[in-house]
Length: 78
Image (cartoon, rainbow, N blue to C red; front, side):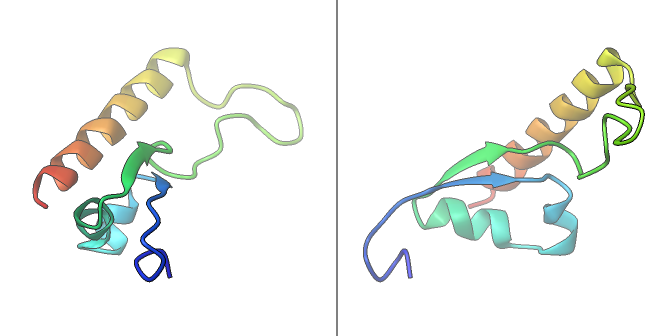
């Protein structure tokens, strides 16, 4: 639909999407859309009941950097 109306969009992508849907990130970039990082996976970072952290700040930063690198590498293939 976006192609039909010549509209570009920003797609916030979880990096593990690359493993589940090969070629999707490349397709998004090839069509001229912007790619944004929505993290490595949809793992909870905060316990929904207690609201306590489930990972350290350092772990969160490392996972986010890994996700960024994965998305950049996939986007470069297009």
